[in-house]
Image (tube, rainbow, N blue to C red; front, side, top):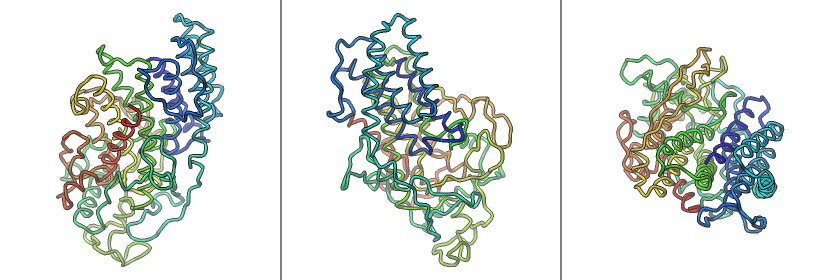
Length: 500
C-alpha cells in the first residue's frame, strides 16, 4: 500500500500548500473534495488497469479507457499510479508543478533503489498520464465552474452574513447541481438532497428551541464552566480538534478525514489480515474521496435549499424587534435571545485576531458531519468486507490513535499560544459523533445540523453523547434522518455499492 499512501500524502500536502500560498487555486471544502476525488479516481484507475483486484470495476467511461498495458508488472503499476496522480495534480494545482515533479523524481528514485526496473516504471508513468488526463477531462464540465451568487435573504430563519465578518459572501451556492461521482442521479442528472436529509425542525418549535438553548451555552465565546450547561475544557478541545476550517497551515475538512483514514489503515496494518495491498489501498482511498465529494454535493444542495441561519445570527435576532425584519419572528425566545452573543468560532489556527468567525454558508446540514460520516462509514464497510466481520464491529470496537494537526504541538491558536500535542484514542463511530458535535462546541452549528437525538441506524446502535439537545419532539424515524451524519452514512452505502 506504500505507493498509494505516498501519492495520497502528496495530494494532501499539495492542497495544504495551496491554502498556505495566499493565492488558492482550489478553494473551499466543496472544491477540495472534488479535486481529491479526481486525483484518487486517476490513481484507482491506473492501479486497476495494470494490476486489478480480481477484475474489479473501474471508474471512468469506456470511451476514455486507454488500451490495456501488457505485460502488467509491479513496476508498471507503480509507475502508472504515479503518472496518473501527477497528471491530475499538475492540472489542478499548476503553480506547484515543479514541486510535484520533484515528488515524482523522489518516488522513482526510491522505487529504482528498491529494485524496480526503471524502464518499466517510465512506461507505466506514461500510461498513467493518459489515465490522469482522461479523469481530469471527464470532470471539466461537471458544474464546478458555476459562479456563486452572493444574495442574502434578510428574513428570520435565513442565512445572513456573520456579524463578525461584514463582507462575508456565500460559498458554493450551486454545488448541489454538480455532477455526482457515484451516487444516484434524478431528473436533470442531479442528485436529490431530500433523499439524504430530513427537514430541520421549524423555527419556534420545542425541538428548535432546545437546540437554541443548547448551543447558546455550549458554543458561546466565553465559557463559565463549571456552571451547569457551560462548555467544559474537554469540549473546547473537541471543538478545535476537528476544526480544519480553512486556516493556511491546515486547509479544509477533506484533508482531515483522509488523515483520519490513514491513521486507521496504519492501525489495522499491525495485523497481517488488516494489511492492504496497493490495489486495496487504491480502492479504499477512491471510495473515501468519492464519498466525500458526493457528500459535499448533497449537503450543499440541502444547505442552500433550507438556507438556515447560523447560531450567531439566530441567537442575536431570536426575539421580536431584533434583526432586519424586526418584530415578525413567530415563536420567538424573548427570554433568552441575546443581541450581543458571539460563538467561540472556527479555529483561526496560525493567525491572530479574527475571533468568533462562522463559516460562509448556511447551517443545515453540517458539512463537517456529512464529510466525516461518509469517510468513516466507507472505511468501516471496506474493512468489514475485507476481514469478514460485521460492520458494527469495525465501527465500534477497533480503536486507533489519531493526532489532528490542530493539536500537533506545532500550531498556535489565534491567541498566539502554542497548542500541545494531543493523540486521541478513537473508534470510527466515536470519530463520527465527536466530529459532528464539535461544531456545537464552537458555536457555529445547531446540534441537529450534525445529528438528531436518536442515533442513525448506520451507526450500528452506537449511543449518542451524554448531553443530547433536549427532549425529542419529532418521531424517531425523523430524528434518525436528521443532520449531516445520517446523510453521510447513506452516501457511504451508495458509493460502496457502486464501486464494490
